[in-house]
Image (tube, rainbow, N blue to C red; front, side):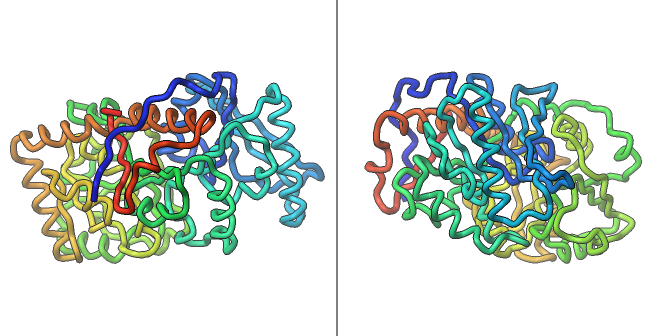
Length: 404
C-alpha cells in the first residue's frame, strides 16, 4: 500500500463571503466531535450554518429556528415541521426553508457539506458552489438506520465534488465510488487534552470513586460491548470503571451494573481533561460488529494526548493506526481485555518515557492540519478538476498530515 502525503497547492478559489451550510444528523450542542472541530474552523473565514434534523411541532406551518451560541459564530438551524405531514410534504417544506435561508443571507451560492445523505433529499436542487460529503461513519450500519439511506448516499456521491472519509477502512470501502475521495482519520486538539497531564482538581462526582480508575467517554450506544464491560468489572472488582456520556439507542436498563461501574452522565468537551486527569487508564470497549466495522474513534488520540494508556478491542482503524504505539493495548475477548487493563495500569505507574513516541505521532494529527487540507481540496474543486486522484493507483491511499 502506497501512502501519499502531499496534495498540490492551490490558491483560495472560493471567496470568503461564500456561506457554508453543513447538514448533520447530530445536533451542534450534543457532543463535540469531527463536525464541530471542522465547522468552527470554517466559521473563522465564512458564515457557517449547521442545518440539523427537523423537530416535529404542533404548529400548522413549517419554520426555522436559528440558534446562535456564545462561544462560536456558527449558527444552528433547527427546522420545525408539523408532525402529521407526510415525508413528501416535509421535504417540500424543508426545501423551501433552505431556499429562504440562502436568500435571507445574500442569495450567494453556498458550499453544501453533508454528514448525512438523508438531508440531500431536500437540498439536491440547490445551485451550490461546491458539494462535499464528509462520510464520518457508515451510518447505514447503525441501529435504526433509515432503509433509504444507501440510495440517498449513492445520489449524493454522484453529485459531490469531493468525498472525505473518517478513516482508512471506510476509504477503502468507498474509494471506487468517487474519483475525488480522500481519507481523513481522526485528528486531535492535543493542547486541550494535554492539560490532563497536569495536576487538576478532581470533579466532585468523580472524587470519591476509588483508584485505580479506567474510564470511557462518548455516546453510550449499541457500539459498546456491554457483556465485555460486565465481565471486566466482575473480573477486577478492585478496579473502578467510569463512563461519561449520553445514552442513545439502548435502554439504560441494559447497561452493566455493579458496585465498581460508575455512569456519570454527559460532560462538556471543556470538562473532559479534568475527568481524564483522574483516570489511570482509558477504555475503548467497542463491540466488533457492523456498526463498528469502519469507525475511527476520535477518542483514541485524545486519550493519548491526555497521557493515558488505552485498552481497546481490535477496531480495524485503531489497530492499523496505533498497533505499534506504546501504551495502547488490544484485546480479542474478555480475558485479554482484563489483561490489557492490567498492562495499562502498569504502564501508568511507570515513567512517562512512552509518551515521547506518542507525542511525535500526535504532532502530525492536528485538527488545524486536517481543516487546511480539506479546505484546499474544496477550493480546488471550484476551479479545476481534481488532480490528486489521477495520481492514485488502485492500492494507493491518500493520507493527509501536518506536512501538507
